[in-house]
Amino acid sequence: MMDFNFTGLSNLSAPTEEISVKVLILGSGPAGLAAALYAARADLEPVVLTGMELGGQVSLTHAVENYPGFPEGVGGNELVELFQKQAEKFGARIEFDTAVEVDLSQRPFRVKTYNVTYLAESLIITTGATPRHLDVPGEKALTGRGVSYCATCDGWFFKDKDIIVVGGGDSAVEEGLFLTRYAKSVTLVHRRDNLRAGQILQNQAKANQKMKFIWNSVVTEIIGKDSVEAIRVKDIPSEKEYVQPINGVFIFIGYSPNTQLFEGQLELDDKGYIKIGIQMKTNIPGVFAAGEVADPYYRQVITSAGMGAAAAIQASHFLYKV
Ligand SMILES: Cc1cc2nc3c(=O)[nH]c(=O)nc-3n(C[C@H](O)[C@H](O)[C@H](O)COP(=O)(O)OP(=O)(O)OC[C@H]3O[C@@H](n4cnc5c(N)ncnc54)[C@H](O)[C@@H]3O)c2cc1C
Image (cartoon, rainbow, N blue to C red; front, side, top):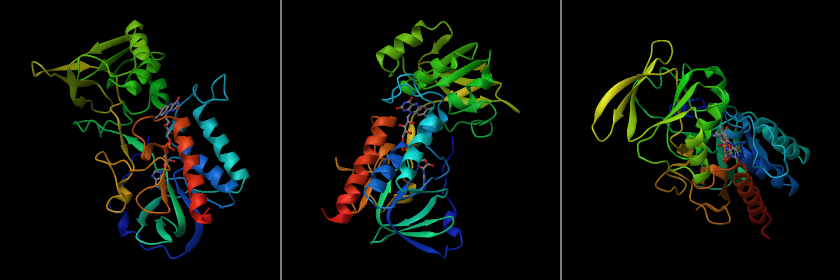
């Protein structure tokens, strides 16, 4: 998955062209594309900035089985392509560009991208969230060489290998179970002595012959020259460390919302998520937020898309004053 780091981008030469839009949508995940569909059907001619990840997180997953309307399931990429097609059919414009600077102090809101500056009467922020890192030695250097944050993307590379999954929540267990399709063994390292994942997932994991558990432990180093060869594990109660040979490390320890751009301008909660009310309104009139950028709870395609639709309806009320 892409890592969004805007450090240093303020040094970019100032874009010259200015484009006025009624509704600008930041992000092309389920929330952004659902907002685009609703805004387009309200004749607001929305422009969607895709960011670095067209289709958002779900585009990385091979199968979505919990989005209504697809009884046989649907590929994540296919689903967001359908979202995009439907939004474009009604006039939404999708731009392969990323917001690098915003000024929300007055309307129209100014959003600088790599290419232009948008002057937006209304803004819908759907920039989603990014997986959290362990921040241990070896992690960065070995990312893409055995360290991964996406089972669907990289599981195939670990056929008949021994891998570690770090985490104990729903996504760690779900992704761990998915990885058992490929791997010889999947060992879940968790800092507590029980999982936080839902009971059904826990039962499935414990019943799976390929899954093992290392409780009360943390990974303190990922070791390897050109690829992952081992991890250093610390047993928390005894504080003893040991090295365990391993072929791959999948990290699922939560997400950070992509809200760095809005710090100091929008009200964020203590974890950095944009604070919104039930109507997707931020503290600035005309600025709405939807999906995982404002939702640390549900984290689903359907909830994100629903929030996106609601944000667009509110943007329409805001602009038409009805
Ligand atoms: C591997 C995996 C499998 C999943 N499986 C399922 C599943 O089966 N069912 C389910 O319901 N959910 C699933 N989810 C969760 C689901 O993908 C998310 O809940 C959903 O994608 C969130 O949508 P979003 O639009 O809020 O944000 P995201 O999908 O995170 O999209 C954020 C968008 O913002 C863009 N962006 C970021 N910064 C900028 C910027 N500065 N300027 C412009 N654009 C920007 C990104 O490029 C991206 O397009 C899965 C997630 C993962 C990672």
